[in-house]
Length: 114
Ligand code: HEC
Image (cartoon, rainbow, N blue to C red; front, side, top):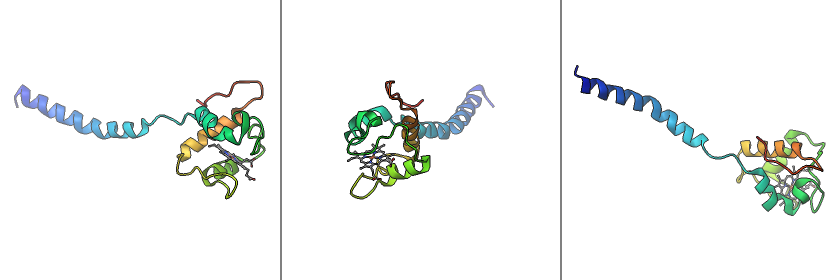
C-alpha cells in the first residue's frame, strides 16, 4: 500500500470516528438558558424583583416548596394563574431555574447558576 493510500485510509478513519461525536457536540452546544434574563423579561412581571418579592405571584426566594413542586409548576403552569412553560424550556432549563431560585438572597444581586 502506498503512502497516499495509507493517508487516505487514515483520513477516512478519523472522519468516520469523529463526525458522529461532532454532531453530538453540536446538539449539546446549545447554550444553557440565561435564567437571569428570563426572570428579568418574563417571570419578574409577576414574581417581582427577580423572584425575591411577592407581586401578582408568590415570592420564590426562600420557597418552602419541593424541587418537584417547582418543576411541575414551571413546566405545567396553573390554569388561570400562570402559563405553562414546558414548551419554552427544556427539563434541563427548568432545573437551572430551580437552582437560580434556590440561590436567591435578599441582599445579593441574583446570578445565573453555574
Ligand atoms: C402572568 C403572571 C406570571 C408569570 C409571568 C409567571 N408566573 Fe409563576 N406564578 C404565577 C402565579 C399567580 C402563581 C401562583 C399559582 C398558585 O396559586 O399556585 C405562580 C406560581 C409559581 C411557582 C410556585 C410558587 C409557589 O410557592 O407556589 C413557581 C416556582 C413559579 N411560579 C415560577 C415562575 C417562573 C420561573 C416564571 C418565569 C419563567 C414564572 N413563574 C412566570 C404567575 C406568574
